[in-house]
Amino acid sequence: MSVQDPGEGLPLELVVMGDMTIRHAGDLKPELLPALAHPGPVTLDLAQVEAIDATGVQLLLATRQAVEAQARSFLLGARSAAVDDALALLGLDAQFAAASDLPSVH
Image (cartoon, rainbow, N blue to C red):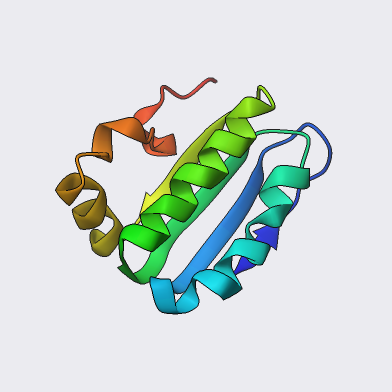
């Protein structure tokens, strides 16, 4: 995972790579902690996620809930086909706003 922290108040982008499965949940959870500590909006780039299961989706839900509980926005950036398929299978695709779905401000 890589973290692109632009500074206070600006969106934080976390790039998740590899698998978001029960086998990797223990490693992923602490890597998502910067999202909780950052004072601004958070975007997760999931384009490089190769596999995701219900545990990975639960990590997304928990991270989103924690960020939004602090009155900050949480968006998914690019998503791999595996992420799209898992969210659709679980009926959660509409629950997660993708950054590309939002109108751009110029």
